Amino acid sequence: MKKQVPSTVIRRLPRYHRYLGDLIKAGYVRISSRELSEKMRVTASQIRQDFNCFGGFGQQGYGYNVNALFKEISSILAVDMHYKAILVGYGNLGNAIANNVNFDKRGIELAGIFDINDNVIGTKIRDIEVMHMDEITNFIEINQPKIAILTLPKSEAKAVFDLLVKMGIKGFWNFSNMEINPPEGISIENMHLGDSLMTLCYKIKNDLQ
Amino acid sequence: MKKQVPSTVIRRLPRYHRYLGDLIKAGYVRISSRELSEKMRVTASQIRQDFNCFGGFGQQGYGYNVNALFKEISSILAVDMHYKAILVGYGNLGNAIANNVNFDKRGIELAGIFDINDNVIGTKIRDIEVMHMDEITNFIEINQPKIAILTLPKSEAKAVFDLLVKMGIKGFWNFSNMEINPPEGISIENMHLGDSLMTLCYKIKNDLQ
DNA sequence: TAGATTGTTAATCGATTAACAATC
DNA sequence: TAGATTGTTAATCGATTAACAATC
Image (tube, each protein chain N blue to C red):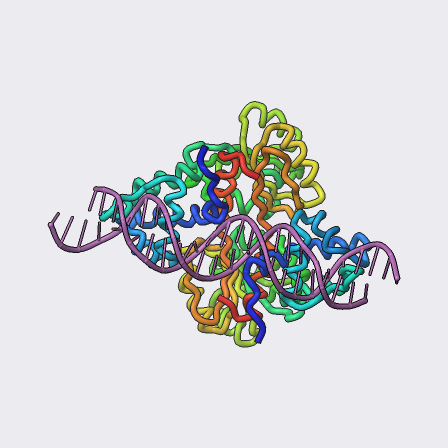
């Protein structure tokens, strides 16, 4: 059993993934840790340490093959797991997420959208019909999504969360302001937009970064 | 000149702010680091260390006065600076941000919204009229906003960013996928939604948190 | 072979936790 | 005064950087 990878490393992987994707588009075949470090403004040492958490992806005297490295990182980030996701709460935030996020690129299929508002039920977004919450348990049983995107008000979020955990959803991308203490076996990523905005204000005030 | 506060501490402040706001609503007058630590699931030691970066807010034998502490943290987070913000790019992401984020609570005034699409120009959102990008320099000169929220496509983001820096904007809340290497004196908070989603997928795959 | 660059160990740095004296 | 809890120092833990031997 190999040692657990620090979460600091994990949080950097998506950024590597983006940069490597861009390098492929730009026609790069190989890249050294030094060259990548200059582009990304991190140390070459950190890059090598990070990649070595997962085993050696490079070759002495050569560097890293961009394509191979991109595939390795994609695989670590579960792109090839092809998880299905559902989105719950089709307000303007849900709408923005459904429209803006490139799910494909991350190997994710947005499989269903749910709301309780009759005005939006039946509308189509990227070929996905918005369904009524009444249909959600049936939908989950049939389609077995792993991910739920929570873009509903805090007041309704907890009840929906509990239901979805019971139905077997494993990961939650939480845009509601609900604070969750994740149960065993459940993964959560909280997007507290306001927290980020406040951090920005602190930086401005203190003339940082 | 006091020692710079670690950014790990800063990133925790908005969460303290949220919890303290809730405690006030719940009628709490005082709270000890131990009690707060149980609610927030962090160590009491960390809480005391964090607060002491800014000077002693508590009292031995008593704990912390919730109201006073909330005000101190608000002030550290520049809530009383009353920064003005503009939002650039009124697509569905811009729309969602303008509608969902509680700017007031953070002492921020969303003062103007800009786009280039004639279909949305002139519409009103929370009493703010969407203006054409042609008016942005004039608007900035008159209103002197400090913050710009970038919710426009990557392809257009760089040019707008450069213009706004020139016009005196100090902080950018960046939802575009543009990578920015911040110039001297400019603060940036990047919201790479996709990065968070990929991190979630990693956690699910590895059964974490 | 010579040059380049990784993989990996060791050194440094920073952040978290523990402990306890100070003090309300 | 006794009890509680902070502020703060010291110990531990973890993450980053530096250095260099291994090797392509």
